[in-house]
Image 1 (cartoon, one colour):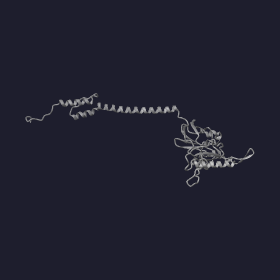
Image 2 (cartoon, helix red, strand yellow):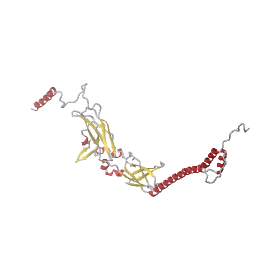
Image 3 (cartoon, helix red, strand yellow):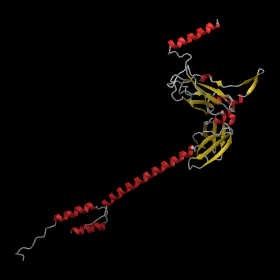
Image 4 (cartoon, helix red, strand yellow):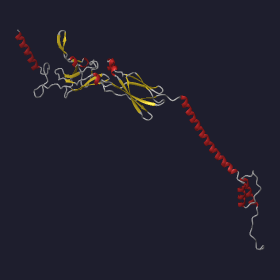
Length: 342
């Protein structure tokens, strides 16, 4: 009986393959040389991390079919050794990432929640698959969340406090940092680079990590720019923040008003003096034209041939000029002698 059923199943399979050559059930893709072409494996599998947010990226292999999907698995070597489980020896294997089981080309995989232990080392691998084929696994390099992540710039605010600066810092908002609350203890030292804006003089400080820090012994009323970066014995990949500038203390308003007032009074005084000089010059010119010294008037009349009249202090130059002209008009004109007179 079993032999008949086995022969019937074999005959049905052969009949299906002959009558329906396009059916892909149980078949593999064959190349032109008669051999099965394997599905290309992914390439450039890498893990990047910023502020404890881990992302896996990859590229499809060459000539990957468009309907190909990709799946991701992770491995923690610390748990990959043989261990006893309910009295039986069990070996940890690769663990599938549920949110990255059917990725398409160009997508990335978020491994932030998958990497739970920041001090442990992890591996990730990617496989391409179609309904009928699977590619080989492509494994990433070893990754440790704490040492391989890049620590981004802190949130910084700077304000003046007289002859000092008050610098407040806080961790950047990131779901990876929120997931690992103990990550704040990894920020052991804060590096401050303080630069005076006026002349570029700068100095550096290393202070223990605190949310509120005070930089003292600065000049009052002077602007300083502060750059902050973090140091950790577990991680040297930190990005400093942009410079934040502030005055240690603003100049007093009363003194500022006094300076502006003196400057305005000085400008008004300069304009008044210039006006007086211009007006005085015009007035002097008018007086000089109206009153000429008596000696100059005598000389002018003698040149014209008239007798100088009695001058008084009130006699003006125009009056003398008019008198001289009248005398010339009334004086008899001299005629040449006639023959009888000779």
